[in-house]
Length: 327
Ligand code: NDP
Image (cartoon, rainbow, N blue to C red):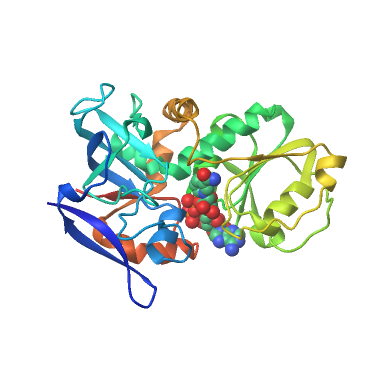
């Protein structure tokens, strides 16, 4: 038997989350069974666990869009027992049992070998949030952004995507501005590499279609009015990598920044990202992300504490990243 956080739907339609002992024969189909060591709690996991949004596509479900551990058995030639592996996305924790468990069985195509220089815990201190932050950085660079272009804004700065994006951009030499609702955490954001702290209230309300040109680029994990104001405040030819909806899914903007300033809105998706892009993102994370900042940005919990944490994460009360030690 193994322990998992199991989500069930109650008669009144609410989602119930409880640590439950399961038989390995109940695991879904897949070529590789993994002994999971660490998982994480991302924004999407918190939505699934609280039932706040229809993330889970069938019940009962083991949530957890990420995991890291070692291969227990494999019928795929690419993996053998003992190999260190990680997984992000692919609908795991949404439609296929996920990582908040001591065991998982998944398709071999979904796995990534843990890059040299990282252990399993460190990869989960990054998790989908941090890997998405790297996808955002890669998108900005593909659109020609360099430190010489000008300052870069990160919204949702104290969140998982935001904190890792700040650390990565600062390490690359960018002047990073951080937008946050928690200015009391300014010292932490500065330690990660932020040069300027902006109160998110100044970006969160409806604004003019074109505003003063401030940033050459941005990583936005917030959406809604914030993303609209960021587009309106980008310098000529600037790019925003948009990956999130912490403020809202809406995008109440005008085309003015795109047609008058040549601004680019670059969408970033981590869930279905092709394997080559994932491997490149993880290679770069291993090479570029300072390990001491990662440790200072992470808290570690057991499986039993996850259900209580989820609503606090959605309320924006959790700083940085959360690793779950499932062992
Ligand atoms: P977190 O909860 O860790 O961080 C979100 C941050 O957004 C909060 O810490 C807070 O930062 C800010 N925030 C919260 N509520 C609001 C609000 N009402 N208005 C403005 N800002 C707000 O989540 P993650 O970093 O894990 O994820 C961030 C977003 O990115 C989520 O929407 C998530 O779904 C999305 N995402 C998308 C992915 C993709 O593949 N496209 C992959 C990963 C994440 P502060 O307190 O500093 O203001």
